[in-house]
Length: 112
Image 1 (cartoon, rainbow, N blue to C red):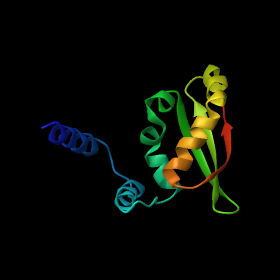
Image 2: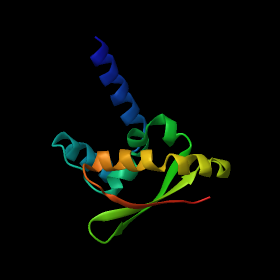
Image 3: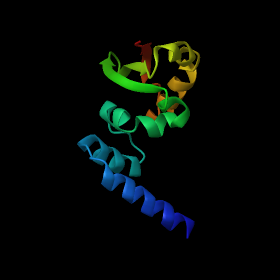
């Protein structure tokens, strides 16, 4: 059963890493199609961004701004990748907004 194997792998992965409250509530809210918070974004960064972006960029900070929007600060794994990430800014914005279900991000900043 392919689904059973994937489920077993997911459980094994979750057991190996510590769980935060944001991760627990984020998983519960996700069942109902709702997003928990900015902490949920930080907890699920790799899942939201995918391997292509998460492997070269780390979420450093999330700041709430006016109007229920967020400003995010992203740090490239290597300063030389900052330019590549700036070219992917629209895709990063799209993925985060898709995750939240609305235009949640007002600004993306890259820190070297």
